[in-house]
Length: 158
Image (cartoon, rainbow, N blue to C red; front, side, top):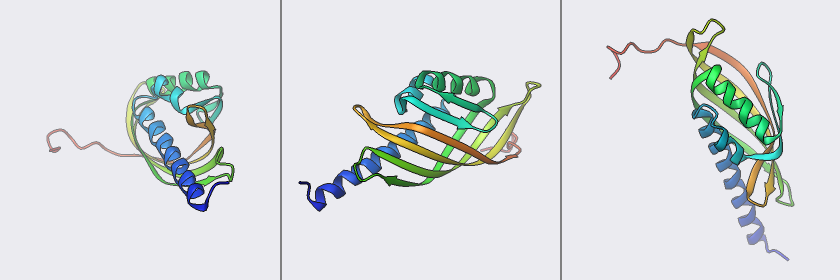
């Protein structure tokens, strides 16, 4: 039977591993939704959904569809996942997390023009513990606001 200290250490370990998955997901996003990096954080039967972007099922489908978005629509990004609230199940095999997203983006419009934006969003995400670590099982991105901003002209930038 596990002691209270062993349970606490297992919970803290799971919590940190999930935070790492969130960070690696954001890093993959900053690399134009790098499909190989995305596959590493997704469960085989994962679901990814966001209004305006689509709903994709399966690790490989998600990785490829997000890669297309990174190549065609959101051509540059810098993700700041903020303060994840992680609820880990008592069995330490599943978890749910909520976090905020603050993101700088360059988005390409239908006409091919590029616009710099601030993007504010939230994530709801279920995780599972697999043999090779924690994975995203079902992720829902809800974009709250996209606001254009002007880049600093190069003659002003440091």
